[in-house]
Image (cartoon, rainbow, N blue to C red; front, top):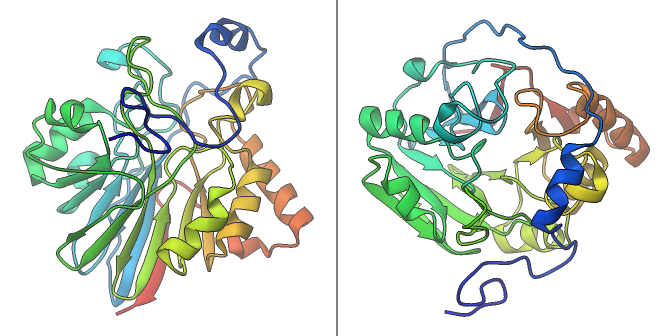
Length: 314
């Protein structure tokens, strides 16, 4: 079915900024990169107790969060491998290990998979989760064949603004401004997006990968008030190339203002060196953008690896 973001063959972003052509990639790769440490140790943690919270959200690394709820546990874009690339042999190497080891996860009922890029859709991680927990994987349109190849049996493909109930969890697929590809030949054959999860009167928004675009102003109207927003703030330089796919911290602050959540947490940072900025530059730039916008420090923060935030009460 042809829509405002699907032409019958490929998906596309219905608004600016426009994606850079694939021919621009060599120029981007020649940009000077700030050096990152080869390894930063993260002592492994155990999942925290849920207590009487509506949800407890723990930062495992990059875009991977454990979201514990009384209705079942979720995990976002599970990435536990050492490299973000094909065969776990190519691509950027992990600088910080996962704060919770895969073997220490509690039972996972739902996987939220935002799109098919290697740093978000890791086949070994999905395969391990499928074997241990047989979870439901919720993902945007076109990603089911890839997910099914990992042994996952239960898959729900959603278009933007479609929803599904998983027990007492309500999950809405939300719009994002990005692209998809696993190879140079399959660009935009599958959709990308985020998710709004409602449980026990609380609502958590996981943005996935996205550039800044006007849809943030519409999102809160569509899904309702947001208690916690998980927003990407890293992998944004050089701007001439990255502004069409990733927000920088100042744009993430604007998204926070558009969404008006009770609290936002920055993600997509300090795990894989995907772009040219320094490892801690997103945190510094977020603080600067927050001050410029007059936002309280606690309203938009970054969790340390393994730290948690509590949402609501049951």
